[in-house]
Length: 540
Ligand SMILES: CC(=O)N[C@H]1[C@@H](OP(=O)(O)O)O[C@H](CO)[C@@H](O)[C@@H]1O
Ligand SMILES: [Mg+2]
Image 1: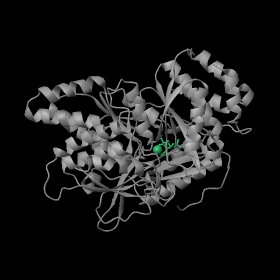
Image 2: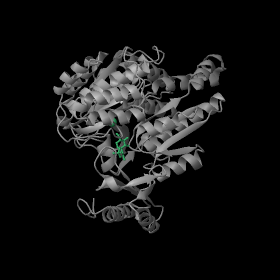
Image 3: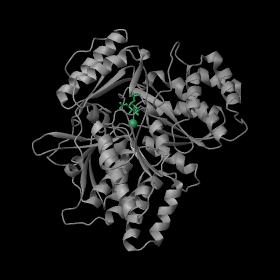
Image 4: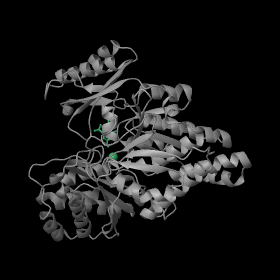
């Protein structure tokens, strides 16, 4: 380690005095102008992690659904997964070290993690379309270079595409080719094969309206659309040509406001979907004949996918264990439907895809989705091999189902939740099952729900996959009493990992009740958590 060079270059990416940041649910996120030093230092850290794991490490520059002025960075571990928790702590230490302590912190991390500094390092970098992203990714490159690491800058990529690249590079190409072409070809081939098997009946030419949140998803979907145009025609909205990133559009806006994005004309019963700013989340929606808006969120996506996979397994005659992983935000109706009607085991983890991903790895087939539309399905290596064999050996009908499953496996991005891949999976399933968006929506009816934000997140701690508040004292009892006042109700609070707020969630038998309950819980938080910030007002 050339400590002299590190000190010299670090001074060119100086940390603003007194700024403390935390590697949160999805890496570092804050105003872009405060992030130059973090980017440089994450370049350094990626090199250390690469040396330690003897693998390629990814660095993604994005702040996903946050406003355009924000930015962020996260590291991607060897199998395309989120960074290991012990390294998240190193990331926080390194990002917050004062200039004079940088050398010591780097040496500390290297010693603690037994990093062989002679080992080669390779880092791949991707970025979203924010105006600040190009310069910030150059700061990552500066950090990588000064520690002697090699790098490949993919430039503009969706977050899941970068996860895919890392996974491909560390599995000797078995997962796919680590190029943007390779990604498009792998997914499109699987999709076209699948849709060929759908029984077409004249008007079956499928089209879909896609709100791209004015983000990277628009660029990449446009590049990709001609690869799969045989099976699906997409019409892009909020493609970044005029609007601001994530402003009044995108998956986060649609899910949290429970209304359609601006800039998209929706005719009744048309199938529409929204990506978020870095294209790792997707939600679907439509207007019914009476003009009512219907949201189809991550829970219903997980239900569609797991029921389809289960049906295929029955046809093939394989009894593999399927599990669905959700968070506390999953609508109560979805959990009930999965457990009681579909008879699929459901597990609840803390918020943040890394928690869901790890739980899903415990099954032969693990389907995980956050209610906001971030998720995918994971297949164990043994399952993949078994299905490949079945697709060659079984007799006709079973072989067809095994072939379908083989293609579906290829169509999922098993490194991370991926809006483009999930969209193609959903479109393929709807086509194969001959389902309309309304029929899909009718699987179960969501319980009305409401999410609110209040201060002060520092005093809130939780347990039981964030469903019970431990501190401040008395808060959980207060929530329990409030919940008892409403039918089919549930409520919980947790500190956000990406914003400086406490998130409040409530559901009940009517929208009015869910709104009241959410407001009352907000007031309880406000009173018991020190009365910081504005007193929550009723009305939304
Ligand atoms: C309620 C909600 O949607 N929370 C989101 C949000 O996390 P918070 O910790 O709630 O701020 O951002 C995360 C990263 O994108 C995402 O994984 C998570 O689901
Ligand atoms: Mg995102």
